[in-house]
Image (cartoon, rainbow, N blue to C red; front, top):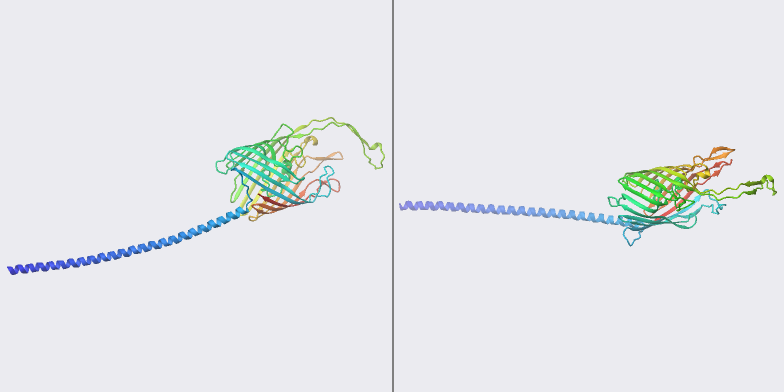
Length: 482
């Protein structure tokens, strides 16, 4: 039994050794698996780390390239802004915010076909117009605040000799628009300002493509400025203005900037303006004026006897004596005048920098001429029915070249007649002009040439009837803004 017990113990011991060997084998395999897993994990971590570093390097390179591109764009934008700033007219600073001082100069060299090296026998003014002149030299001082606005405009020129005069002087209170920089919803002004009628009167001289306004516009409004009070404003695309004015513009022949009667002229314009657009912009409006003109009275005259030596023999003949009857004094009188107008302006820039602009205006009036053939129905024994219009086309050839053509027409009295052998014969007083213009344009000024092909009835034909007076003109203009 002892042998059996020993054998059993040895068997158990052998079995335990086998179990221990299995455990050692399992432990070794487990350690190998752990080492393998550890190595695989380290490899994956390293691969992830390398991938992250590569991604960060690529992103850093992309960020650096983007930063360099943005810096280059900023430098290019700064260079463009500096070039634009240098090309702009120099600006004068002011001690208060919202105050600006600007101006411009227009100097001309003119050759006119009707010029003569003579003097006007009545006024003594030279008839020569082939000359150099300063057409306009303007200084504008403007103030613009949220609820207030005002300005002064001074003009100097040598058109009729050296002169300096006040043109614009306005004080305004306003209700600002909803958007910053928008036109006011309502603004009330008093002083001297541009008459709110039509298109050309509201254009600045440096914005107008042609050298001067059309003939009809210059006849009805010798200058753009008159004294009065005005309400104007804008709502979305609608523009409106109404004014009560003296009715004697600054350049009017008889009473410039004065008012010989108590009646005032009422005028205004209502229109639409789509505003600036990269492709097409449209503007237009209707205008009206109703007012009172003034005809000066005459002093009393005495009867007189005169002698005209018709046969040139130096001897007083009975048939050569003429008598004139004395007249009594006549008082000054007022007369009615009015005007209606329509205008349209279309600009299309289908190709950037190549803007095509078409605009036109029509005016029908009665007794309104104050600049070319001033209307006086008492002197004519009838009302003067006037009509005027123009149409213009301009084409921008890039940013620095502008060409254009304009036709304008004006008749100061459609009912004018002359007596021929006691019969009334219609007399044509039409003025018409074809204007051809070309200009080099920069932000700080323009160099312009214009040829005007003028037709009128101021001359006499070989038969003694009214005919065309040769009056074509060529003008070279230099313009700078500051």
